[in-house]
Structures are given as structure tokens and as C-alpha cells.
Image (cartoon, rainbow, N blue to C red; front, side):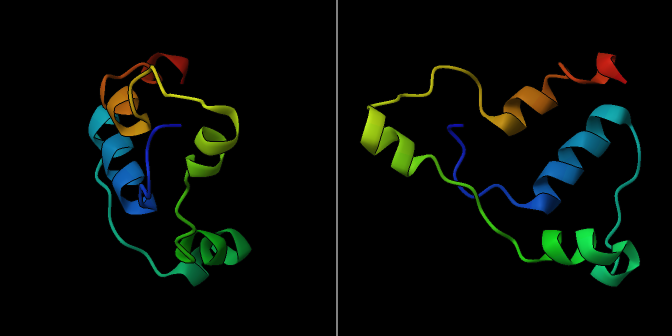
Length: 75
């Protein structure tokens, strides 16, 4: 992926906007182990893939792709 460091919050807000649903903060404990894992942040990076394989992203970023609504029809 071309994105560097998208937050869970930005993903949730983008998905909520596409689905026209409200998004609100909730304590990680509300979702058990999964909530605690998401709360860690863990930003993604394609730097190693780009370096080792010379990969260059050619598609929209994840947030741009989500905002375009491409996945709304799957639900």
C-alpha cells in the first residue's frame, strides 16, 4: 500500500462517512483484545517492500479508495 501511517481513527471516519453513519470514540476495553490491539496504533509502511523489490504504488491510497465508496456495495 502507498499509505504511510493511516490511523484507525481516520479509517473509521472515512468508512463512517461513506456509510453515512456516525463515528464516535470508545474506550479500547469495550472491544476486548481487539480493542487493545487497535489502540496500539501500529502504523503501516511499505518502505521495506519499496526498497527490497523496487515496488512503486500505482493505485489510490486506502483512504482515497474507501472514500470513493468502492467497498460500500460489498455490504
